[in-house]
Length: 190
Ligand SMILES: C[S@@+](CC[C@H](N)C(=O)[O-])C[C@H]1O[C@@H](n2cnc3c(N)ncnc32)[C@H](O)[C@@H]1O
Image (tube, rainbow, N blue to C red; front, side, top):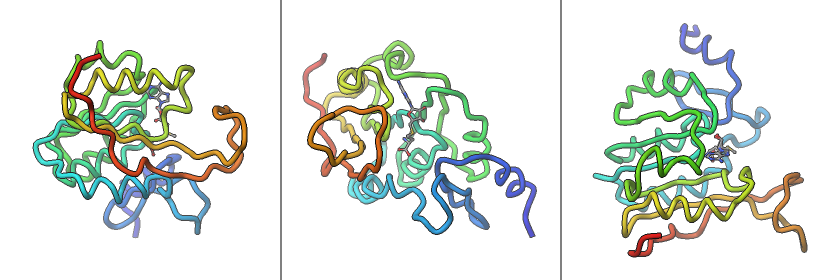
């Protein structure tokens, strides 16, 4: 028998499939395809990092799967941003009983230094975001400003199997890959 929460969430469109205990949100892929596959590399990698005591930023969190996971894995505080508003983030976060996660909708990377201040984060996840940006290279410099010295940034982007066109706004069949290791922040400011 479905609960009010399940009925409510089943009426929404989902980017992530999120395990709610008795049911999961649908995710964006067709039934039978592995949901959340683009975050598999991140999921493997993040388990190797001790998040305890860390203040973490999830840039462009969408439905929040990675944010919820990092909090569950021990991050002290997670800040989750989106470039547009999504009311269901708070519904899912609260239903999962996860405190310590602040949601910042309608926030773009270019405005985050003004919003959060410099050097605030021990770890920044920027997954699936840079190819949406007019100036993708600025993502690295903006995240560098937001990181504490010695912090980590994790990046996920598609590998496009083409000989030319390193940047494309029409990506036919991307193959997904995480950065093999987190990029350790250099100890000098930008
Ligand atoms: C493909 S989704 C990735 C969602 C999630 N990070 C993941 O990997 O499953 C792209 C996300 O990038 C965010 N985004 C797009 N342009 C952005 C920008 N200029 N600054 C910050 N976030 C942006 C959107 O809000 C959206 O949540």
